[in-house]
Structure formats: structure tokens, C-alpha cells
Length: 190
Length: 190
DNA sequence: ATGATTTTGTGACGATCGTCACAGGACAAA
DNA sequence: TTTGTCCTGTGACGATCGTCACAAAATCAT
Image (cartoon, helix red, strand yellow):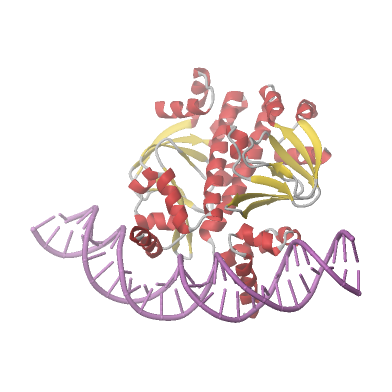
């Protein structure tokens, strides 16, 4: 739980009273590898603050898995649009390793926020971070080639490469695993 | 100004007192075609609510313009990450037509939000909408081929096609104008 | 240690894309 | 009308990617 408080205080000033107010919204839970945090077709009613392990978001289209994001320790995983609008999620979030997360319940969070502008502000910061990350990855695809995308991840998210297999990474980069393999080969030959 | 109030009330409940509190943060301004709303290298200190006309966000990399978004009437254009973090913007926003916008000043908005949880909540909703749209377009690139992306825009944003030239659209879809032309040809021949 | 499963690399081939070059059409200004 | 500019289409060619197939390497469970 202390990890979450540290995370919050890195975003915005947050009193111990507000931390107490927030407690009813928090539950700690563990997930086995491949277990769902969020399943396609269900409504997302939680934020998942990752304490240990990592998970991924992915679409399954015509039986093919397409990874859209990886989430590691001290990050929040969720489906912003489903969480915000109450509509069904179009993608899954699943643990890639045994995972421990603090689940922040939407309804109880909103109740707490009604009486605390600091909590409301915290919510805004969380969404802002999410929007920034989405923007970063949207640009990654709109602006760069697959090879440049790989180099961007290598430079900016080296930890991701350490923990995610090349097949999983290829799916995330929007190419087949064969293509990723050839990009790596091409590059080493130059 | 009424358009902005209608926009706000479509997002969240908003009293006339809060509307009055918000007034100091608002300025109306017109832009000529090709004029900058936000220039690369400067910090984004405003939200631009578009009353009439439209604008685009774009990167200029090695002299090549890459469009990343179009913003029309009753939408808010901004650079969320620059607006939120205070860092310099890496892209431009420029009017594509003569444009009228209500400029919402960041500092004065934050002052107003300090004393009003309704305004703070409004800010959260604005960012949420932005995050949702970013997510939508990030997925468009991660999941679909150029042809499927075109079909998605045709189905979901037909108005965009009416107002944006094919060259501009090609840049937005992440392909050259020649490729977009051939996609359209291929499709009509089937 | 052994066998099964997963992950990665690679060759062949066709499809798609980017680049360069050029031509025709739409539109606005003189 | 004429000129100039911008937008769109298309042909040629090389580069890159996806698909299918198979093999090697690494990992996991027993």
C-alpha cells in the first residue's frame, strides 16, 4: 500500500486525511499468469495499480492476439474509455506473470472524490498521465517505421525489452514476429 | 460562448455560478488560415474550444509534415502533455481554415478550479475525452492496415473526409498520398 | 535427464508501400 | 483568357512486409 501512496504523492499533494478517505476504495489482489484483470465485453470498474509483476492489454481480432500495451510496477492499468463512459471494454487486460495489484474501485473512489477536491485532482492527474502515454504511442505509429519504433522502445523503455518476449513485442510494434526478427538481423549486418 | 456552455453541460452538471467563475479564463480569438494556435517549441498554456472552422496538429520531421489530428467545431484542441506537464510542445497546431476559437487560459482555469469542485471535475472530463480519442487513434494504427484505417474514418468520421483533402488525409493515415490514391483505386476495382 | 512446449530464426514468394517522375484537372489571381 | 499553384492520379522500380513452411534453440514440466 505504501507504494501506492508514494505514487500518488509523486503526482500531487495528498494529505494523510485523504489517504484515509481513500482506503475504502482499495483492495489488494493477486493474479495468476494469464489470468484476466479485465475481460473483453465487461465494463471496467477499477484502476489496477501494479505492485509486482506485469500485465498487457490486447485485442483478439479474428483469433489473432494484438498487444496494445504493457504495464509494469508502479503504473496504473485500466481501460480509460470503459472506466470513464461505463461502456463495455473492447479489449482484455491479462497478467503476464504472477501479479499483485491494488484495485481501486470506481464507485467508492468517486464517492471519496465528492468530498475531497484533492482526490478529484488526483483523478485528473491519473487520467492526464494516461492520455500522455496514449499520445506518445499513437505518435510512435503515426510518425515512425517499424525499425524506428523498435529503436524508440530500446532507448526509452529498455526494461520492457528485458521482460517481454520478442513475439509479444512484435505484436505490440504492429509487425509479425518474422519481420521483427529480420529488422534485428538487417540492423546487425550494417 | 453559448456553444462552450452547451459543450460543458453535455459533459457534467455545471451551475451558472461556476460559469461566471470561469469567465475570467475565457477569450475569443480568430485565426487566419495557416496561422498557428500552438507552435513547436513553445509551452501550451491554453485549451482551444473551436467555435467555427477547423485546425490540425502536425509534426514536422526532416522537413516532412506529418498530420496527427484534426479538430472541428465543438471540440477542444490542445497538447495535453505540454499543457499538463509544462514542457515544450513537440508539434504544431495550425488553422486549416479561417478559425474562431474560445481560448481557455490554463492559469486562470486552475485558479477557478481551486475554489470549485465542479470546475475540477470538468477538467477531468475534458482530459478523459482526450485520452479516449487518443486511445481510439492509437488502436487504429496498432490494429488495422492502411485500407482498414481509411474505411474506419469513412464510417466513423465522414465529415472529416468532406473537409480534408486527400493529401492531408494520407499524411494522417500514415501513408503517402500515392498509396492512398492506389488504395482507393484497388477498392473501386473490386 | 527426458520429452513436450514455446520461442526464435530463416528461406521463398507474392502483396503492399515508398520514391521519383510526369501529366491532367481544379481553382484563384492577374 | 491566361498564368500559376495546388491537388490528384498513375507508371516504373526497389524496399519492406506478411504468409507459409520448416528447423534450431530455449524453456518448462515431469
